[in-house]
Length: 193
Image 1 (cartoon, rainbow, N blue to C red):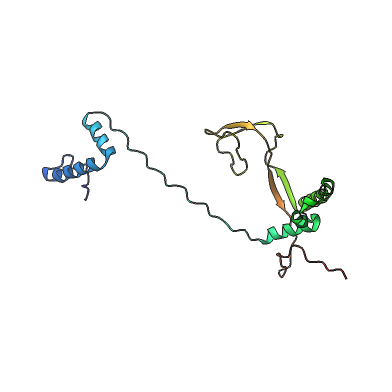
Image 2 (cartoon, helix red, strand yellow):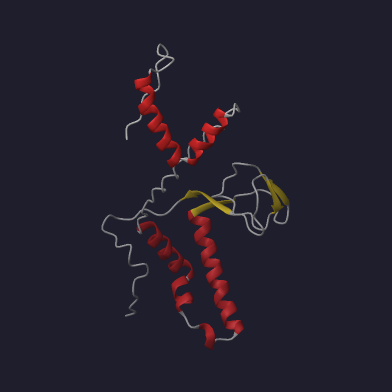
């Protein structure tokens, strides 16, 4: 069904021939659209017509996901293996060892991991307040940098206790590697002669 164009400003009162298709269009439009019928009733009864419903915004586009290459992750894993023997420690079944032995091994892994972080990354807290401090998050806060936990209801501003300051990397200093370097070998096999 085609809709009739509204009369132009120079044609304020449509002729009978123009009103007939307009009447049929209005009849079918009123039958098919309850909102249009409600606006017609309000107009007929002399009340101000209800505003047309606001258009619904389309859903936001899905974020574009970027694929991270494995080289930097493999390089970091190699550094953690070299300095802390992390893969060996995590891959070991520690159930057979006593707490003192596990604690001694964990101390070495901890020291090696700390060394890698100090040498290759600059890491600062996301929030400067002390843990346990009362903080207020305004509208528009960076949800990627602050995760809300607990009873999250309503809209910002949110007030709560800081349970973890968070960490942000400000600089990465991974060693350069030769082009032919195979990053998948995170720890070469060792053969003693």
